[in-house]
Length: 114
Length: 119
Image (cartoon, rainbow over all chains, first blue to last red):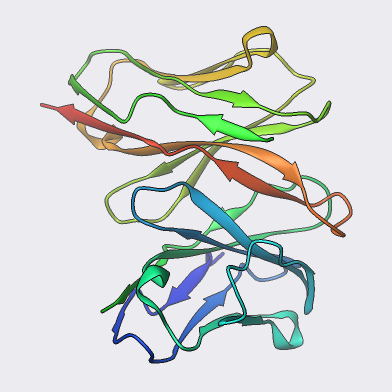
């Protein structure tokens, strides 16, 4: 069974540009989570989908971030326009069902905003 | 507030030494879950263990063991006879209920402990 995949693995963009990160969860996993680690800080929760519905987006930093999960399969996280403080590693995780399922993580996307 | 503290930023040991990674947590939930993840140099977060708050039995898996003590709010991780392949960053995490998400929970993370096992 394939694990969680994320694309790209690394993105370098200029301040003000737009970047879209993609996450493909483990097949059959209804829950999808986005987290972010800024250098020197803890990994922080961004948002959670159940299938195509956003359940909790309390961790999204501001309205420059937009996450979607059309059709309840893969998810995208768009940053527009990117700022310097958006640099970090963005992790995606998925879990199977309800309750406290174990979250399985992808390799992350390292975003560098110059 | 929910919080996870991993006081050890970096640990360096020589192969075959035992090493313990500390994790202390704060929570107001009566039911909660604790996790350990490993992040090898390749970058992915690899799940190691999940423990719920009702189960204080220690867990052993090969050279890995976990000591959960509710009285001290700690969930420490010990690697016995460490190997070079154990070199990684290890994260401790605590579950927290999410807004409008039923029983699903997000993870609250410690800063991680970077373990270097030298030959």
